[in-house]
Image (tube, rainbow, N blue to C red; front, side, top):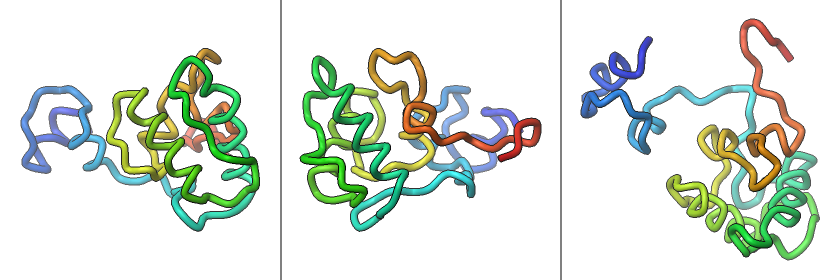
Length: 124
């Protein structure tokens, strides 16, 4: 399905641009975790580490500590990162946030954290 056909099928303006409404219409990647308040584990710790290391000179707000627990300070850092990236600042890490470039390291947040998006030609 092309971007235009997805937009048409969802009743969106057909402009071929993947803006916030088009991103929201895309199906979620079942392989990538949705991180939000209360989430725990290694992906959260990796997120906190990247947000802390890359914040200076960019989005300026970092999590209070790398704990592996998605708390209010992590949510605030995610929102700052999202605003810096020009995407909807909801404080949750879903597909659009995972795909955003992570500061000066020249890669997506997903790759910087050490997660890998599964595709048919590159299974997990």
